[in-house]
Image (cartoon, rainbow, N blue to C red; front, side, top):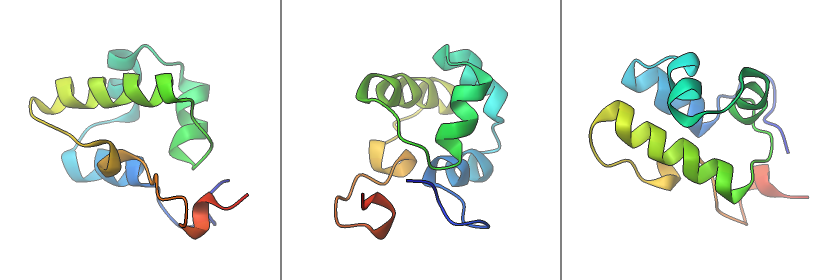
Length: 82
C-alpha cells in the first residue's frame, strides 16, 4: 500500500534526516532507481530487498540502523492494511 500524498515513508525520512541521497543508497544496495522510487513511495518490498537496504544503510551511516527505522512493519498500522 502506498502512502497518501504528502506523507513521507520511514525510509525517506531516514534518508533526509541522515543527509543521504536515494542514489547513494541505491548504489550501495545494488537496487535500481525505479525499484527504490517505488519503495520510497511506500510500495511493498520483499524481505530480501529490505535486508539489502538495511545493510546498505548501515554501511552508509557507519553505525547500527534498525529495520523499524526504515520500514513500518507493524501489521496493525493503517498503512499496512490490505
